[in-house]
Image (cartoon, rainbow, N blue to C red):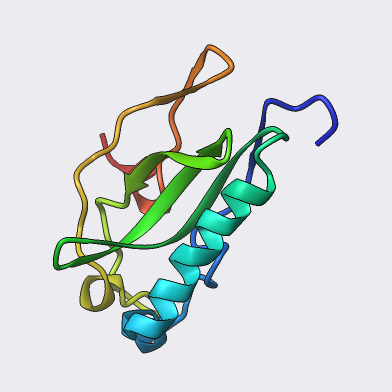
Length: 121
């Protein structure tokens, strides 16, 4: 990552993609969100990080993508299109979030669709 402005990790990296019912347990998603915040603080003097994990907002549980920069969560994108076929069971586990727009890192606007969101307009 030497010299990079942004290091990107995949969807649900912090908790594992297919956590199923485990991600719905408050202790699990609370620990995952705390880990994201600690990572932001620990990497404050490095490049921005983009990393996936669960997010709770109001009564909703979301598959989210966080942009960490300067010691804080700078942006949170929420997955909109939730797959629900074969091994995918996201509609049961997560709420659909609004479509997110681009974010900026080092003056560059970046779009990071979360998996299935890239398949739709």
